[in-house]
Image (cartoon, rainbow, N blue to C red; front, top):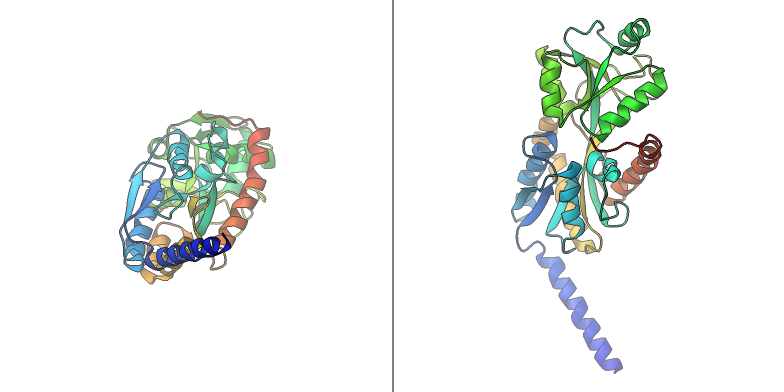
Length: 319
């Protein structure tokens, strides 16, 4: 019996060793839990393109949308943990999605591959807003209480609006929208006053002069847009909200998979062409330490501990 056990163990280790040497032996599916065209989709395609030659296999983008990204993320949670199905996650899908009735556990059903980028959120205003920066906006709101309309297009925006009210003592009129794209269209046309959105969507419009940048919601200025002041510089310390992108795999994925995928991810992020493209999109490449599985695990845990109590206390619900 003992000899049989030893023989089976040797065989098992041999199989694992072969798998580790041959992975990946076929294409990898990268689930993007949002529609094509947005910043998440763009970053996923940039990373897939640059990781493909490093892995020696195609990285196939599959957009699986619905319920704030929770449908696509749920698919990954239920996938076979063999390294051939992963997802690109962000604040909305791996933190803010607790507002939905999830059939998976965000803390227990995934393992981090690595943090890709920190995506500073911008607070932007319509072109004719009677203020040019956050300090001027607060002064105008003091004289015109309750008159500013604020777009609520996702959980991150709603939570940021709630935080804005808490730290400034001001009141906002929340206007629900189905997505940042339609919200940006109406901001440009002047139908709404304020929008908080990832810089990848807002920065081209700011640079074109169709909207105003009130502040970057970060403790420090972004390397990709150093001319935009922080919320603290605008007189509102503590008004921080940054998006981010990271790769996640299903729980139970073998260690050798993480070594291959993380290695390819980090090599891609070191590519000057990738870094230049991220800068154009207003994205800051994550630090080398944050790019590791351990780095993303620590980062993700801190995000949950920061935002979940606020989401629950404010009783944030899907719009």
